[in-house]
Length: 354
Length: 214
Image (cartoon, rainbow over all chains, first blue to last red; front, side):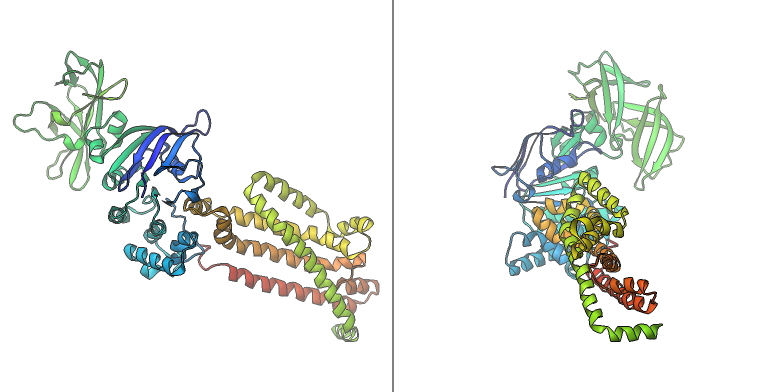
């Protein structure tokens, strides 16, 4: 077992194309780190740098106490699961799973034993003699996982392993993944653009944008206290309401409604953020409420996602997640903004305030 | 006429046997050189766009020159000999072998090669256990084309005195006797057919079930 450490990692393809910039990260044993971000944020490049499929321009990749930055992939003892699964089409499931072990010249008996163990865990026993072409997407996915698990690597790398599965299967495999990797001791680095996967699977999430690390932390902390406007908008579904407002004294005006700023905020122009699930119908004693005209109701099953134009400034809109048991359409609705759920960001630097 | 041809064949069976041996040698030697040179070159050109452009274009350009012309061009250098024929026929077998090898290795999904690299497989093992098995059916298809072409074209060797079954065809022409011509042409056709059927079977055997649809 060995921790994975990225030190000052930078990858530049040209002067203008720099997908990874000065990245510092540590993933300990038993940790499940998810790299999450929009397309082109550099997350897959980071994984390729760790795997040795690409060479860093600067910085180091450490596995345990070894600097592996210049080592070929074969000498790093890593296992990788790819988005496309990339199973060897001419080999049976058994041969695919065993391929990584044969390289190490283990005795045939040992290889068989390990393959049996892993195939038992992943429910592949009835499929062992089939070729990948005869498997469904979910089954191929499990074979790709088995091929990685069987190696007992120092580090696991997973590159969007669920993105080729349909929504229903994805949910199921996600749950399976969580259980399977809970028993693994090695550090795991998982890349996804799907924040639900990031939130549900990880012990630690790294949010990336434009090659820069935006925030690193426990999924709960990232949801609760996003470090900047980008993280606030990227994590959470439906997306957080983010409204740019200029201050008047110690308050900002949200249409006709005045909302006090927390003490200590100096910025001239601020962004108010509140998640749709934190907007609710007012109760007695609520300090801050706004009202507005409902113009769109989206039924999400358990909830309705209600969009309204704020009274006093129809260019300002808010989206709220409200119980689906009432008819919200065309209604003039009053909503409460619980102060503890409001996030403030500097409009200029986009960093969190207070 | 068939009757005449049959009679002629019976009367000259030892000559036919010698011609057949010569013909097979004229097929085997160029094919062996073609495989020895063409397979590694094809693999190299699959790895590099530059090499591929240079190599495939130059061999395709050489292909435009008819084999007969190559034969006569080779004669002043190599003489009226077996080796002139071998040179012409080697130039003929190279393009199909080279192109099919290039295409076969180029068409392997880069994701599969990368997966193997990512799982720690060294390049030699990737070639041996992943790439060669996947490329083999297409490579064999190229070898099949080359073999059938060289079996047919080896008849031209008779023009430079290198013998082979073409000798009967040349003789048939000269003597205005289609029966003698058939004695050369029919075995050539049969050989070509045999190669086609045989190598198709090999190709099918090399094709793991379900790979195409994967």
